Image (cartoon, rainbow, N blue to C red):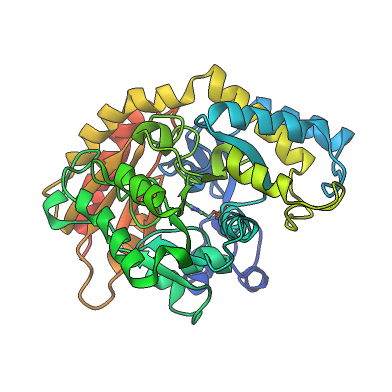
Length: 447
Ligand code: PLP
């Protein structure tokens, strides 16, 4: 029963917890058994009851350069005093242009223009609107249909939910935006693959089938994560993304990579696009762009797309793309972003992730053979452990595992039938060991 004197309630009463409707959470269970976080540093979260909790997911894949980076905190503090807000429509501030240049320099050649948003979800919907408007400006307004992928995640706004492919995120909301879906790239023969799976390049050919069904003249874009994160680290089979790129080129379909999670080092390369050697027409970003310290997202477009908007914009003072947010390029987010990009480059974060990845892979795959585990997948500093669903409540096992891990001083993400791991890139071998040891202790004890 709730004991409100317990430090875990952080001075709040059970009744006070009701005012906050928590996102993507079992509110009823949490409010009976709260897991309050009151601080964070390096690879640790500090719980309200005074424990250092090992963070195995970099917050939500977003604090990948480690928690509590003082360079970012100082940049935020300075900016809050000097310029806490600046209107982004028809006026600008220098940091927005500086950060756009930093992102442009890092992203693959050909991705040259950066549109700022405040989240991954906003980036997804911005990219979809950009793609539709692009075809209209090209004189092909019938190219409106979007193709996503089953098990894809592109946030929770209308467009991202539509092209997304996680059933639990879609089933409550009826029909949203016109879209269709490629199959997920999960194949039984790829179970327990390490890194990129061998089989499944043919799954990209489904795009040809969808072109056969809808006709390319009606299709605006294909939207995929280079590696699906939220559905449980689904790594594309060798050659798959290249094949998608070829089919898109053949039929004049834009290719959008959602790199909200893979962007800035998670795969051991700067981007999924760099790792797989495939450049999309549009790339969406968020999360690590500020190391999670301030909400921010970005949509990076090709020169061709940007030029099309500029060349068809009418009078030069009229917005070429009637889209944007009150907080687009928010100065405090830009300040945090510039500091985060300094850390990313100076501390060689992508290389650091790449250097730890083989050890991480080896340790995570040691869990194979434990009760309930039906698959383990990984790429760079991302891994997922898939569990056989509980016969009565399909998603119960990952939840129970995560609760026991929390008791043992470790935060893990549980979603659907997976436990997901994506530690900060500054993680040390001993912490990787600790992570896997706790999981090895806990998983077999669950019904
Ligand atoms: N796209 C991808 C690939 C993501 O992983 C996420 C978040 O996990 C999003 C979009 C949504 O981002 P946000 O939660 O910032 O809206």
